[in-house]
Length: 234
Length: 108
Image (cartoon, rainbow over all chains, first blue to last red; front, side):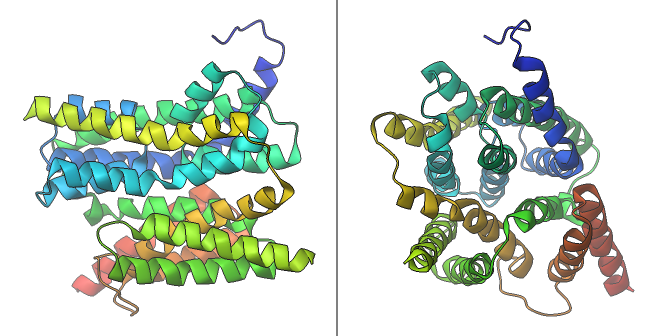
């Protein structure tokens, strides 16, 4: 699919790979935390690796394993996976204006590889530079391979150690997202949206079932932001 | 057990792919307005805030705004560090170190 001879491949693909280097430690730590927790839940090394290769969505994998440990039914786990990952509807919609002209096969591959981290890198690049699918492929594939490798390492470590929380590794996820979020905040409107979304997420966490707070707060926060933006333009 | 887990994984994979792909199909047919773009700027801000805030304030599924919540303390310190340096690797290392240090201090 990707020909080495393609002239736009080397520089854009390499830029994509380079863009993920600052994310490396955060993603590696979280992948190890997932591998450890999955072993603790009784998953075999094969299953936990397969989950990383096929699902490739850190936060929902973590939640699924926690639910398995708490003895939840598969139906609830599937439902929660959908709820947690429903944020990708929004992310893909915001990439839509850039990616809509691309071939379906590219859209399938890049959709499969879409993650929070690659999304953050891609959207900030596309708003500044000419959107290039090889750039998105570079970040996404880099993160996919890293997620796979460190999941296996975590799984192997899990045969000797147990609780990842005891090592503070679960903190890698919010820490990574913080560094992704900060450069996006450029005006008082953005700050207001952060504060209100934070309140929505806490309220949702406390009062909504399982993980409904994720789509609830993400959608509500986006709407509040959009309203502030349209109000400014009047 | 193994076969059931693999069925679960395939189910999760199909659902997750659907959430990532559905919007692209929709956009093939629809034209995007300026208003839509203005709204979409807020997607990453809202999504990342939604993941970060509960992870720091409700680490054990209960609201904990106190000095005993090591995730909150580590979060505030790493936020300051991330704001000053924009260094992701440093932020992750500082955050995890603060958590481990606080746990050690609490256990004394």
